[in-house]
Image (cartoon, rainbow, N blue to C red; front, top):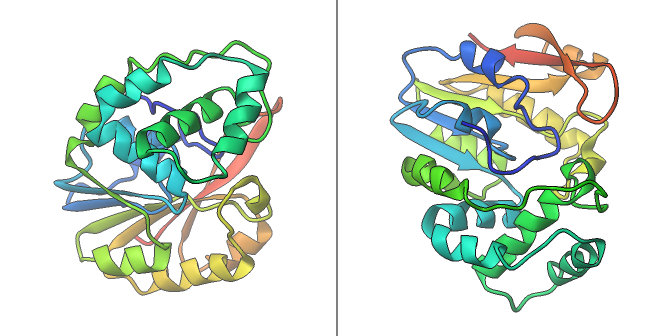
Length: 243
């Protein structure tokens, strides 16, 4: 199945390739930088224990509301429509407290849906489908998924086991400014350090970048090419794994 939201850096075009590399003997699957969850949703089940994590609180709140308050979220979303004025109003409202989790989730859902490139920054002038009907399938898929809002290092250490599989899709090197959460060069290196010490296995997505190739030179690096979502042509990426 597909994710219910588009997301900057989403892996819908690479989900098949990524999941084809998953080992069979996994008893827990952890998406460390969950984003839109395209890889999570690609299969009905990856393991008996599944964890979705992201540092973006609005995103995590949306996932939790889709799981626990789906009907109420659908009703809230149904009151919105596609317009530039509404988009700008939502951007301002999300900066202030005072709204319920369901109200915030609905606003964030609409903001993503009608923004250019799913970046939540600029209004997209094209007609977008805001229908929340698909959330019924999302609710069912998330029934057995644990939803976390933790720093990646803490999360990895908490869930690490010999049969754990971590899928990591961090902000790409030199594209960190596209994301709301701060991700520095030190964070890239901290991620590499913690992944180097795990007992489980990891699969990591990155842009094809000299710095990243050098940082992960001790691991298997698989170059892949996909269509560029925001421009014509192809985009080169890397899949990195420790098994």
